[in-house]
Amino acid sequence: MKKLLLILILLLLLGGGAGAAWWFYLRKPDNAAPPPPPAPTLTKVDLEALPVSVIKGSRVARVFYLKLTLIFDSPKKQDKVEKIMPRLLDGFCVELHELLARKLMEESDYNNDLITLRLQEVADRLMGPGTVTKVSISGIDRQEFK
Image (cartoon, rainbow, N blue to C red):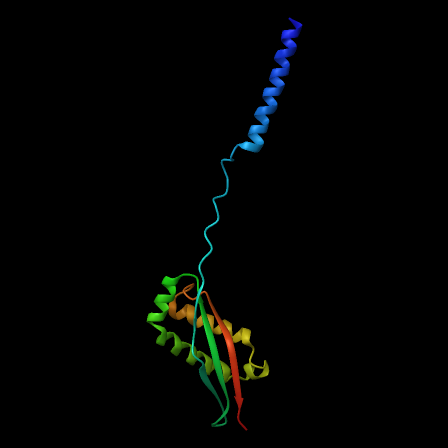
């Protein structure tokens, strides 16, 4: 009888260990995080250089030629913007003419981060927030007049 009791206790311990191993290592938890969404496919549109004249004292003081790149996270958003691109370009030109003529910009040596921020605000206002994922400046040429 003692041997039978000893074998029964040993089997219970082994069964408990096997059950614990399954519980902690092999079972899928109920509150498992869902798989991450697929990475978005980024697309971009390179715009032609936008000429922006800065006028001081009734004459042209300098001219900037800005090359912009628009980055999208889905092709549908890119198609939406390409259909009404003239409206966006007009908004960019108006904002750049207002922004670059300010004394603040001249004192900050025409800070690219500020220009990019304002252009992103224009894109969000005209196209809707999140339509244009990022507006970036791919190049600036500057011509001074004396």
